[in-house]
Length: 180
Image 1 (cartoon, one colour):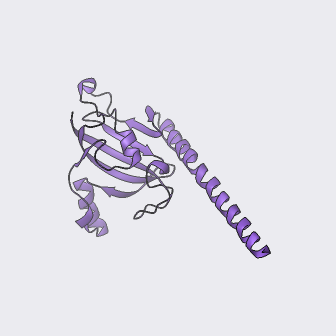
Image 2 (cartoon, helix red, strand yellow):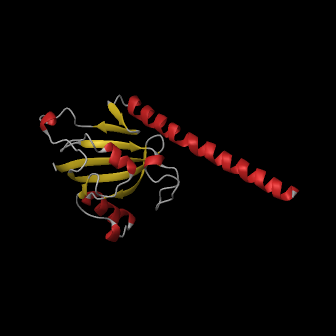
Image 3 (spheres, helix red, strand yellow):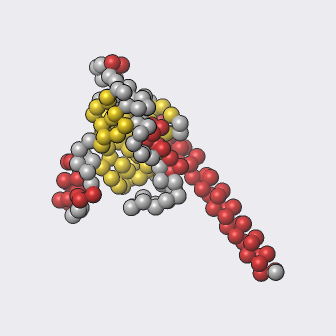
């Protein structure tokens, strides 16, 4: 009985400790996003917990470019990076020039790396929460950076080289927006 009670208490302490630790991850990630963007004096917005910086919002015709809304078809090029206090390791992309460089320099097998724009229909295509929350309001022609906390990326799952509870940075070029 005493051993069982000790085991139950120990499991509770471990579980509580893990929950507290996991609970602090996302606020720390959001703080790192803000520190990174503010230290570079970049104007950003926050939409549903995703930090968004549009690098070329000052371009000619920006206000007339189609804006992404739920249901729209969207094509984009992207790079996906780990993020701690700054952009880290690339873990996925569909940019031909980046894939070709990785094939030459790192011996990457490009079989599972798609070339060319990712085509989605927002609200219909399965996407991670951070992309679902970060894409609306972006416009055709945008060069956008989406800083996605772990709870809207892969959460506590390990995916490829992405460790559990990792923040990510998606760098996208919105090629085309087809209104629905």
